[in-house]
Image 1: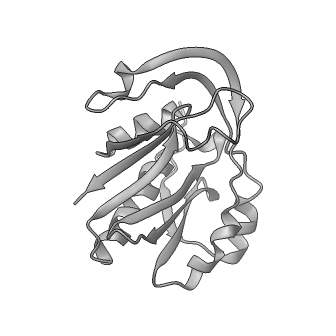
Image 2: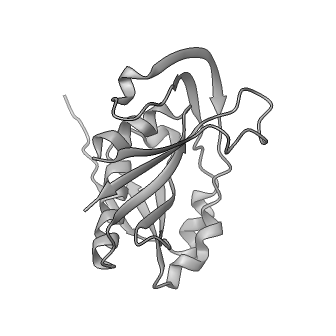
Length: 181
């Protein structure tokens, strides 16, 4: 049996990489949602839903100011010699690093890109002398919630009203995650 092993490499983004990343598919299929509660693991808070496709308006080029910034950074994960995902992170007003966006191409998931990107973000936050990381995701992105939980994040905020005015379907719940150093 002949198998190919690919390593994940993370590097600071470039303008050219941002353009190629904008063409990726970051969508996912929703089959369950988190009925969030504090101090309970995500898997204890799941409810099955009628499956549907969810796509965020990922626009990595909106973070181009982070290419040469002291207050933010933009990292790109490469897998099988291709750009597979990105993480945008910045210094937040509260002494934490804010993960503004993390996304991995749909066909490149489960290969270590997300973990490598998060590790780069954590290193950056340490280098900045920040107290930890924070980020927000939605209750319908169960895979992301599980990922953050595995990375050591704790659920610190639940906002059931944040997205209510944006969606025709049942409103998503915003979940705020924190990783403390």
